[in-house]
Amino acid sequence: MFVAVTGPVAKPPPNPAHLLLSLSLLPSHFRLKSFHLLSHSVSAGAAAAMKGPGLFSDIGKKAKDLLNKDYSCDQKLTISTYSASGVGLTSAAVKKGGLYSFDIGTQYKYKNTLIDVKVDTNSNISTTLTLSEILPSTKTIASFKLPDYNSGKLEIQYFHDHASVATAVALKQSPVVDLSGTIGVDGIAFGAEAGFDTASGTFTKYTAGISLGKPDYSASIILADMGDTLRASYIFHLDEMQKNAVVGEVTRRFSTNENTFTVGGQYVIDPQTTVKSKLENSGKLAALLQHELKPKSILTVSGEFDTKALDRAPKFGLALALKP
Image 1 (cartoon, rainbow, N blue to C red):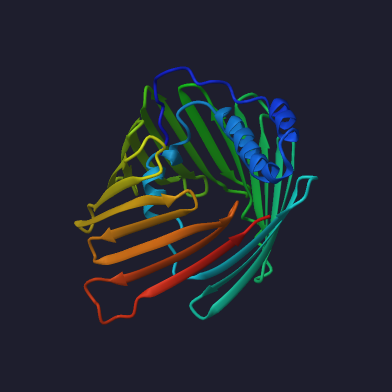
Image 2 (cartoon, one colour; image 1 turned 90 degrees about the vertical axis):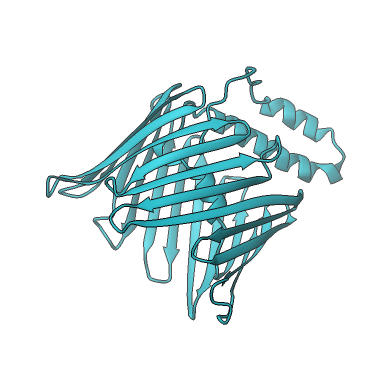
């Protein structure tokens, strides 16, 4: 979840040219790690250019990621390579149940343009074109998937110091139009989104949310599913670096009079190793361990079992992401 924190004025991102000059003066065995830190610094500077409270989809995202991201009972291997010219190649193989799937993708980045093409074993070709700063403070994303010619979508995002707007239009004769907006100041943000089907003249969705973010905690409340679902989440950071945290989420579905509750946490054992766990009120307990084998290459081992049905076999997942 995004935060807008008041406090001392942040220093501008370091000049990449100065960092490169300093890097060249280092001993060779320090250069690889320094280059990794340099890349992170430059990326952080680019991310800082996207000002404002963030998109509506960022409300509650931090808690959602902590409770769901990287948890899996599948087996997955991902291998990525990158060239100095800005071309990246990613291959992935996944075993889900007794089924295998493969895909291969390529990415090309030039200045403010990113092209991503992916082909999978079902003969689907997915293409995404992202253009940043065509107009100041904007991002344009065009995507389509073949052979489904009705899958095309165009999305435009605009970022302001205290607001953001995003609109997405399906590229077909009678499109579905999605519109969302967020306003925020001093760590408080309010947003809403709606979807409208031009073919039927009806709304497909409308959602509203509010969030409060501070350096040591974040909270959000979202009314979704056309007012049928109310979801509240809270995440508390246990350290200044926001590496260790505890999180809780409560969901109320009015139509079925159903409540769900999930608690979880994350703890960094050392700079290369992280553990996460979560427990749902249904009795499902899940945990994972992530270890960085080398910079940007990560091994993830996860497991899940039902505490209310101990006679059932637990599920395990394994993911290995290799990058140069």
